[in-house]
Amino acid sequence: MSYYTKKYFKNLIKMAQDNNFIEPEYYDKYNVKKGLRNKNGTGVLVGLTKIGDVRGYDVVDEIKVPKDGALYYRGIEIKDFVKGFQEENRMGFEECIFLLLFGKLPSKFELEEFNLLLDELRFLPDGFTENFLLKLPSKNIMNLLQRSVLFLYSMDDSADDLDVENLVRQSLELIAKIPTIMAYGYHATEHYFNGKSLFIHPPKRGLSTAENILYMSRYNSKYTKTEAEVLDLCLVLHAEHGGGNNSAFATHVVSSSGTDTYSAISTAIGSLKGPKHGGANSKVKLMMSNIKDNVVNYEDKTELKNYLIKILSKKAFDREGLIYGMGHAIYTLSDPRAVLLKEKAYELAKEKNNIKEFQLYNDVESLTKEIFENSKGKLMSANVDLYSGFIYDMLNIPDNLYTPIFAAARSAGWSAHRIEQILSDKKIIRPAYQHVLGDNDYTPLNKR
Image (cartoon, rainbow, N blue to C red; front, side):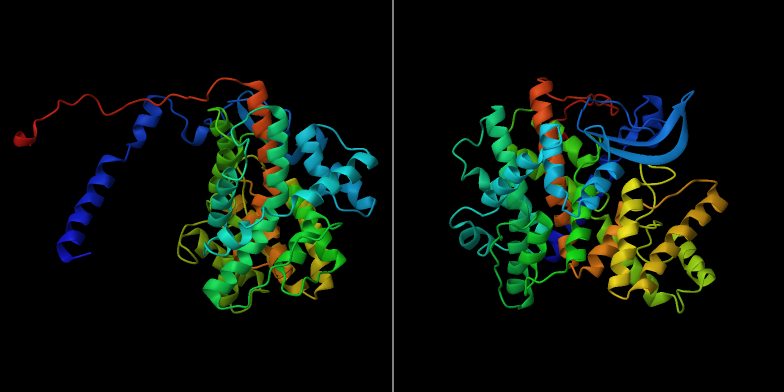
């Protein structure tokens, strides 16, 4: 930009800032609930679902009463679901997909047939890799995922058909293909932007989703049984989180308009890309690196606590005043996903001789709880992002794949919510906004 263009642009920015800010008092005046949250912190009820349920508190006389968190998939508590497949020494994400989409646990035969179907669907259409993923790479793999899902629309002869048979087909194809797109997109990014050799490993039949992600994304395609089991657990725990989470709600909103599956799922991916939603586990890793760089002895809890206080005081790290991986909109005393992941993180840390690092995460969790309870009288618990970021780090998964892996898992939940919306509620979602500016007269151009 020239000097005069830059000066004019600054004026435009000031106008945008001055005329697009709504004074806080209006929200109270019109009883508008920011973020669709009630005064007591609970969510505004906007819909019904049979798919997932998130429980983190009771409401007694309009007061939120904390309790240990629980997560349910189709009425089954997540800890029971996880215990079921882990005790049988098998992967659980494929069973999870079946449960979320079809509302029941599959029989052994159904699960075997379902796995064979996913094996068929993981491969990308002819020419897709060469003509799209490799010719139009992106530094941000979430951006690439979003574009790729939209591009698949043009390769579907029944893209706009809302018949349930078509919705199920499209859903299963996207759930199966997103991990492949993610892995290929990663290698394309490494090749075109970071000068690395290009590796493309086709999906391998007979492997689970977690195993295929490790197989396709690693240059040597090698992984241990523990690594695959831990990633599988991450996929299960990220697959669904009720209809009110930002990306699932976005799926409901967009689907209610009658749009196609590809537009709805790409919208959900765009929502998840945001650092307040799916990008938080990347922030956890950055924060932990910052702590290790700035705390001389992070095994000293007093020294570590003092630095956490600096972060909360906006004097350190990104100066946002947040301890990433701590706190949740619904969970109060505990996040059941974090509890389950912490157990697996410890197992993996032992396998990789990384207990010292595990202890740092554990100390950040306990000290943050202590700080909030002592200074603000507020309960604070670890959320799923704290230990998922640590697990991905131990799995040597690159930072730019953290959120895409979340998307690969959550595509199951998104698809279930889209089908439920289309079959159950035929009205377009259209809430109201209160206009607060008042009326203005139009002024002719020569009088302005």
